Every structure is written in C-alpha cells, then in structure tokens.
Length: 244
Ligand code: IPE
Ligand code: IPE
Ligand code: MG
Image (cartoon, rainbow, N blue to C red; front, side, top):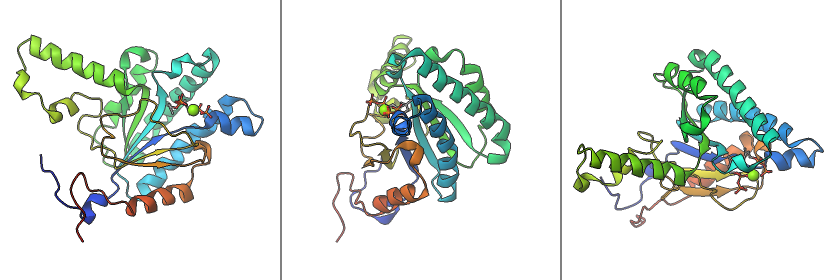
C-alpha cells in the first residue's frame, strides 16, 4: 500500500460521501407531525440527494438508514421505516436502468429476512450500473460488521484456506460489507448530534468530519454545497506533512 508522504490536490477529490441521516423525528415534532412523517420526508430527501451527488460528480454515497440499535424503537416506528424502505427498493428496482445507479446494502442480512429478497434483486439488477454508487446501511452497526468479518476470517483459518500471516489491513477491509468500495472522504451528520452511533468505524479512520444542525429532511443543495466547500478547504495529510 502506498502511503502518501505529502498533501496534494488529488487527495482532496470528493469521491465518497457518507451521511448519517439524522433528525427526521425532530423535524416532524417541530411541525406538530408524527415522527413517521419525518421518515417519509427523509426518504424523499434520499432520492433528491442522490441526484444532487450525481450532478456534482460524487461517485459514492453511503447513507445510514437504520442501525442495529434502532430496533429498540417502538414497533410502529420500526414498521413505518421498514415500509418506507420497501417502497424505496420497489422504486429503485423500477428505475434502475434509467437511473444507472448501483445500489448495495451494508448491514447484517440475517436480521432483514422480509426485505432481503428485494434488496438482493436490486443488487443483482444494478450491479453493472456505473452511475452513482449508493450504499444503504440497514440493520447496520460497525461493531456487528467487524464481528462478522472476524468470524469469517477465523473460519477460513480453521478450514485451512487462510494463513494467519497473510491477515493484513486490506484483507480485513475485504471482509467488511464495504469490500471494494473506497473509504469515505467525508462523513456528514445532520441534526446536531456529535457522535458516530456505530457508523463505519473502520472505514472512517482517516475521513474528514462535518456536523450540521440542519435536520435531514431539510438537507438540500445549499447544504451539500457547504459540505463540498468545507471539504475543499481541508488539508488531508494522512500522517504526512503539508507541502509549502
Ligand atoms: C434518523 O432520524 C432516522 C433513523 C435513525 C431511522 P431520527 O429518527 O433519529 O430522528 P431524531 O434524531 O429522533 O430527530
Ligand atoms: C443513527 O441515528 C442511526 C441512523 C441515522 C440510522 P440515531 O438517531 O439512531 O442515533 P442516536 O441514538 O441518537 O445515537
Ligand atoms: Mg436520531
């Protein structure tokens, strides 16, 4: 692996944007609406932001839609979110050819039995699309993802198909749900919370962070432009030094 020694402009290209879509519930509450209406609005906004990212030349977009911890929410809310996800998958399946968007799921598929066939259908029909590369994190938790990767690696060692000595960072990356996808350049969290909530802990090791008080349903082109402008002003040194 090549370790960059100094900063250069090409390292600043925003190829991969990761977002924690937060604040749907508060957005709704502020308007006297049920929380689920916030999720409806939030889901609509994912479609809008996908188009915006594509238009601005961002190749990879990863969105956190439902965490392994979100099952703790009231059953009605979980049902509503899963219903919206189901609708979203249907619409993506229908428009896959036209949109040229590749969609992949990040997360523990075991816990997603009901919507899994649809997810896998969409992954299959969109696998050659070379437009926006969208990753949706559903039933996703970084610790769960790393635990599954460790188990897979241990199994290969036990079966004799993998030597312990060959385990390195690339091998671990290739056992994560994000295998083959570059690490995010910048991670955005909407709605004011300053935490990762179990999102992409391995992949965000050297990413830039951007926090905004804007609620996810209100996140628009102006907000995205602010993220891009902020990213363009960061010095990504990866442990090296800045060239004067
Ligand atoms: C994000 O919005 C969507 C999910 C986590 C599914 P929230 O539902 O967390 O909204 P707040 O944080 O309660 O406002
Ligand atoms: C993180 O948001 C998960 C998603 C956006 C899917 P939460 O709203 O669940 O996070 P916490 O509970 O405030 O940390
Ligand atoms: Mg939240």
